[in-house]
Image (cartoon, rainbow, N blue to C red; front, side, top):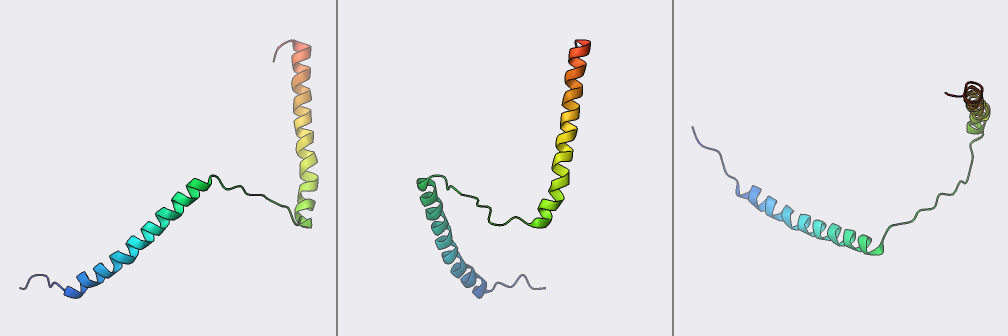
Amino acid sequence: MAGPVRRGCDRHRAGRLQRPLGRAVRSAKNTMQAAAARGPRRARLQLRRIDPWSVLKFSPGGPAVLLIVFVVATTAIYVVLWHGRL
């Protein structure tokens, strides 16, 4: 039985791939350094369109949640004032 076959073209192909990879790494490193020198990027969010269906879904839900919060808060205040402790 013969041992593993070595191919010269594999080494040549690997050598060719290493050079562009090195350039890509250097380019990415330079980009990161330039971004770090600029400081943090600031983004602004602008609301351009409100979907009517989302408004219709939120309209009954928002007040319902606020009602539950109001009832719980009122009950907690009543219990604290009436019984003197929670």
